[in-house]
Image 1: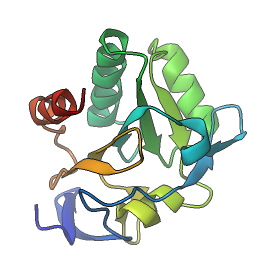
Image 2 (image 1 turned 90 degrees about the horizontal axis):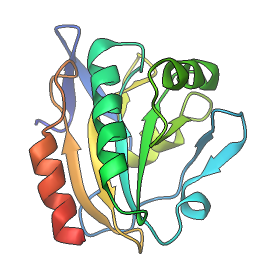
Image 3 (image 1 turned 90 degrees about the vertical axis):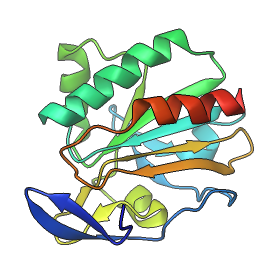
Length: 170
């Protein structure tokens, strides 16, 4: 992908924020849990391998497929791996979506309030206040081990590539 842009709704959109790089320490970020408490990335995911699945909104077709895929995979993975879906949906919408779709193996957090994930990881679709689609894998020491930005936001991530990168960590 041309890292500076993504295609959203058929139009090229600038992607902003600090781009995370493989081998660097992942930045900490805060978001909002579905119960409106603060999610603190470093404190709430200690000593685990983290898969961060970013997408614009769970209420869209591709985003719901992505969440369902990771929910299914989470049931098959070790307890040492945590999958976190980050969107800018309100926590109420995330909770409703998860309940209606039996999404209970992954954590969903909302970046709507501060956009700290989007800004610190480089996932903001400029002018839309939405996150672009992508996946980041972070090891137990909070070192970034894998980054995938999906150029066409309507496309799903390359799940095979993600699983291959995960297998190299475990």
